[in-house]
Image 1 (cartoon, protein in one colour):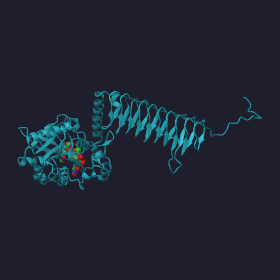
Image 2: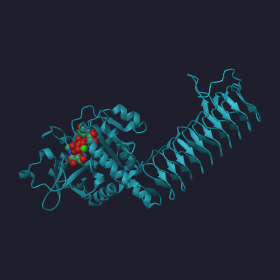
Image 3: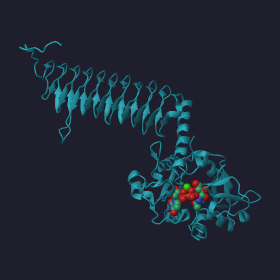
Length: 464
Ligand code: UD1
Ligand code: CA
């Protein structure tokens, strides 16, 4: 059961940094894991936990983020100069204060995979201890790049010291415990210390982590909650860390689905996005990618080398090397091998799209078949239609797109061009090789090709 937090909780995501170590012009939180930007994950987790407000401090490339997250952008706060994580929090302070919330959760935007279980743990320990400031820590074999958690003999957290500022003479031998960059504050306590930050450190920045020492100086209660050796809490600063976290998430999603009854063969090569829903009884073979808001129903079999995005598939067979985007596939259909379904395709029950078939913005009626080498665009095809090999809908005249209507039980001979707009009436036939430019009435035979003539040759080629 997920716990819901409501109006006593406000969250801030720190996401203004450029992410220099990523070596990319893209703002770091726009980098994707399984085709979702990093920032999407924290926003999604915080939304599901029902934090009353989800503020995001943006800076580098904020316009891009506003475009990508139109529903969240009203709660974006722009930090024009990136003077450090503490400064980012100061920029958000007026909005935090005005939210009226009692508790504040802060997370680095580059730690997208923190689970609600770990957040629940931090929040519940914080509340039951009646503490003022809490941080989630983790243990790492290689702590490079992280702030070290410094505890006193009684085990209380005294400070977080950045790697560059760490001095064993001052801070003691460093332990493997590091700061995850996820914090909780009692808002009234934060009010007392937030503007006391200074930049007296190696990087000349305002560190959010200095708040821990400042809180201790004022005898506030600081709590360190250790999540142990927990890969989900690792930050993403470099391309290597990005693909490592993506791989962690990928295998977690795949394993969860297998435990829920989805058969996933060659599972290390199957990539499934965080929003995809797959029912028990579906059977998938890797390599394969399924992203976006896709749904795969029970009984569906997806063979290797398929790419599926924002599509729904019910109890069907997808043969190898098929590419399916924004399409709706009903029961008992067969797609591929080597089929491409582009946005707006609807495959009704029992229909078929065979090898080297491209379909776009079209509905293929019940039990209709487009078996080989065809392009069907902007077409409304009724039931039990048979489309011969090599049939092309000529839907574009260079300026506008036009529709083709194919009524029920029509038979289109091979290598036909249907020049839209055009309608083929029910139970009609079109002769192979025709170029159809006018409507065909129902129950007729249309042939539009030059008649074959066999001429007698006066001087036939000599047999060699
Ligand atoms: C930070 C912590 C470190 C912790 C680590 C965990 C500080 C000083 N250090 O280090 O203790 O172990 O995270 O991953 O906080 N940001 C802004 N505005 C700024 C600077 C940064 O919004 O002016 C954002 C960044 O976009 C990023 C996050 O804050 O999402 C953390 O910044 P980053 O530079 O990655 O901090 P680390 O060096 O990783
Ligand atoms: Ca970081």
